Amino acid sequence: MTHLGVIGGGGWLAGALLRPVLADRLVMPADLVLSSRSGNISGFEAWPGVHMTTDNAILVDACDIIVLSVRPGDLDEIDVDLRGRFVISVMAGVTVEEIGDRFGARRIVRAMPNACAEQRLSFTPWCMTDDVRDPEADFARRFFAASGRPHFITDEQELDYFTALTGSGAAFPALMADAMIRHAIEAGIGPETAVLAVRQLFLGAATQMASVSDTPADIVELFMEYHGTTAAGLSAMIDADLAHAVFSGLTAARRRAQDGAD
Ligand SMILES: NC(=O)C1=CN([C@@H]2O[C@H](COP(=O)(O)OP(=O)(O)OC[C@H]3O[C@@H](n4cnc5c(N)ncnc54)[C@H](O)[C@@H]3O)[C@@H](O)[C@H]2O)C=CC1
Ligand SMILES: O=C(O)[C@@H]1CCC=N1
View 1 (cartoon, rainbow, N blue to C red):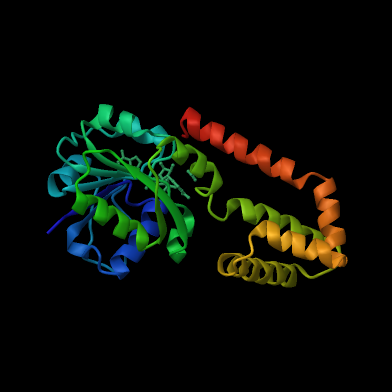
View 2 (cartoon, rainbow, N blue to C red; view 1 turned 30 degrees about the vertical axis):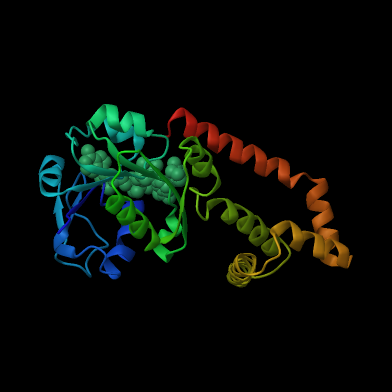
């Protein structure tokens, strides 16, 4: 049986990816090894058989598939030999070439999930080196399918773009939601009701956008053509150049991913 080792397994993203994988029994607890700085990893109480260590060399010895999930700035501390191992990296801004040079691995999948993995709703673009074997590619696809929607890409550079666009998960929509909540509170709505209302709005809007054939642009146009209160609000937001703010944010995030996130 394949053993999976996750370096940085106590982190935010690793937990979000692994709990669905364990719940689906894609990997059994006894076949999973997690490493962290402290060795005390929470969030896996439902699977007491999961192994935990502070020693990455022990993890690598025990496992044939290694997931790299430390922050890019902590990569220098990871002193392991991954020659002959199948490696899956979810690190932002760390290229396949760098992973190969640092660790000697040739069979590498690089992916960019987001924290919605915890809800099994990540969008997860991924790419791989030519050396990856068919069953390994199949495992990677199933691994990421447990926590959302994997999307295979052939151009690794697109991963830096997706790091900005979707790697951020709920954060960019949350900024918009927070602005709406603050406006509602200023208008006299109680804070709890404002949060409740905007959460439900985003749930409805996201569910609708994901399920109807209309694109987001079609939905905007539909309301503009209605010429009602929504159109008044949309026009003011367009005049205030909401798109410019969004473009600036995505450009900055992409630049950070290209420069090497830390
Ligand atoms: N959090 C997110 O939403 C996303 C994160 N990522 C990427 O995932 C990677 C992990 O990010 P997070 O989980 O958010 O970070 P985190 O800080 O929550 O987790 C990192 C973990 O690595 C461990 N660690 C650090 N040095 C270590 C070492 N030498 N040996 C073993 N473990 C060590 C830490 O103890 C910590 O538990 C990053 O490279 C990030 O770019 C990618 C997409 C989304
Ligand atoms: O904010 C970050 O750096 C991490 C990596 C991509 C998304 N979240």
